[in-house]
Image 1: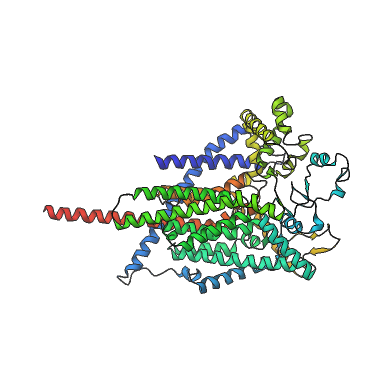
Image 2 (image 1 turned 180 degrees about the vertical axis):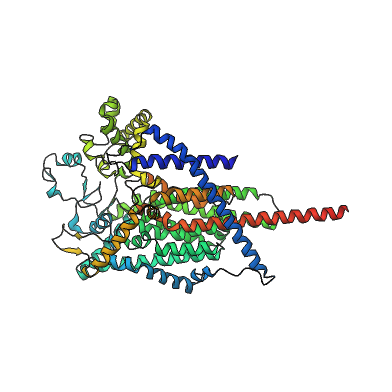
Length: 633
């Protein structure tokens, strides 16, 4: 009954999210549903049955694959006769867990990526990264706290920056100038790193091209080595040969991976730390925490977790949720072994205790780093100002704007309108409301709103939401539909942007290389094929990695009691932040994309362990029954 309840719940969530997500995601009328809600409800119920059947089919297939792999391992290990199955030939095309093999297969992977590398050279940049690089230039100041970028006061349609009432006028238009060294709108550590390299490159070579090329080459090497190691890690722990080969082929052939490896942006940097951190979590699951009995692995876990926090602000919440879950599970395991005298139980308790220590350390150190040391010590010392709170409440501001646009200000009580106007500018809000992007609305937030005004807004937000939950849900789905439904499949191109340092002089510091233009055009056409071809674009669709794959593997894991729950917590947190994020973009779920094959392999490895233990218990029980029968006779 437990498994049937889980199946029904999962099927309902996936079906309803998919149908209503498509209804809003396919809309061309400002985020309005293209399927009438009653019809969408009926379709969702019908698709629930389809989803349930798919989940059951995948569960059966993975179970059969796990048993087949387990039986093959057992037969190969026995070597009792010539008919014992030989290792799969596919393993010839999979890396082994040795430095030489990982290096070789990483080099082969880079060969597959070469068209993207050459077409992207010296690297792709997002506007976010350009903003980070510019901040350290003194001529870029004053900076705008709200956007984190250069605030060109001369070109803003207000009185001169320091004229009468100018600050209030700047505030009304959504500008908050500061003379701080940098703004922590994007992670300050990456801003300092990127900005310092850009300045050094500009000083030595007169452009950003060498620094960008260095960053791209280093990042490509990191990705190739880490992904080759991931495939080797699955092979080492006994994942089926087909899974190991498929994982490696996936890393080599899916275009979004090399494109993001060539893109200098915080999401790619975050993923460089996320991959080995996730593999450490997998090792903790396989060894039931025993890996953390060696201090060097605890140190590695903490350092990687800190790297995640410093490269992406949501990293601290991913680490914190995982650490909390891991500590609770390990505590339960420790208590279960209490009072047992057997050596096995004693070792299990020691492993659980080590795991509790590791989880508390990674969660506690990251919390102290991000919520105490950085804001109260590092920021004042380096003259850094925190980014605005609008990033944290962006989804709420977007939902409020949706109510104003669809229902008008009259839908709010006078008290609610006053509370809203204390934290955001609402005049003409319908012109700034974009159903698929929250940035415009976030730019209307008053950064100097007092705690009392924020509390009043939160109360108004809750009361409005209770009256108009449909508007709030419509707002959320309009932005995030690509993460919950097969719509908006979009992979970024390989064409870097053109950028100018206009705040200094009309001098170009980054440009496309003319010689690679034909290849760049060809690769852009190939990317467009992936984005636009039905069936193929599922491979570059957010819902595949945010919802479908994790849900299918979670059911298989729960159905077979694999005790791999900790591996799903990071995936769940990344999915959560995608859904409440500012826009649909595959880069936000990059960790889930690259680790989807690893999660698949890890769950199968755990299932094999469970099935093996069941078989051993059954054999032991049968042996006991045979002995008892013999004694009876």
